[in-house]
Amino acid sequence: MDPWLVVGLGNPGPKYAGNRHNIGAMVLADLAQQVGVSARQHKARAWVSEIRLGTLAGGAPGPRAILAQPMTYMNVSGGPVAALVSFYKVPLEQIIVVHDELDIDFGAIKLKRGGGEGGHNGLRSISQSLGTKDYLRVRLGIGRPPGRQDPAAYVLSDFPARDKVEVELLIGDGVDAVTELVHTGLEATQGRFHSR
Image 1 (cartoon, helix red, strand yellow):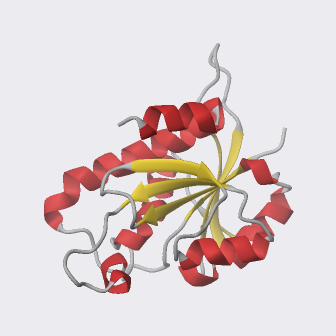
Image 2 (cartoon, one colour; image 1 turned 90 degrees about the horizontal axis):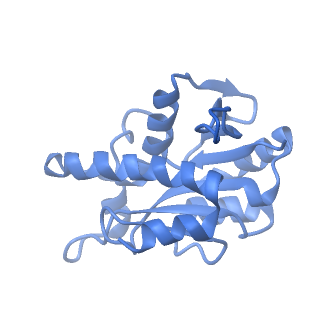
């Protein structure tokens, strides 16, 4: 059975680790930690972990999934993603990109397949490298910047300490959304998360 590819977008290195822009990478790290696997370097210039995502009815291991975080800066993440799709022979309908979304309220999650990138350069790079926009997205709401703050500065700043609990909840919900998306499909997962 073909594997799923779950990509968590973020910028590499400790300088960016707590940035709003890295919430997708935070979800992947949490998911890998929950199943007790470590990431390894892949020749596609990404950190990867191979897991079984959840369990099926009767206790059988869930579908095979490749968790990936490109080692490149977000704006050029498409190359590693396309290389992983080719290497693991992942069908287009089984690619999930987990990313931050300015146009969704902080703490909310929306899911979709395809559509525009909304100014997100990581998505733009992936769409260009794959030659299509028609992949699944788990969009994690970080909200708009306050006042006249520059959106680029906002996404590259850390979540404030006062939001720690909400960030942990968003990461947990992101893990649940990815797992449910693989197990029950887009429509059912949208029904759960969009009704909140």
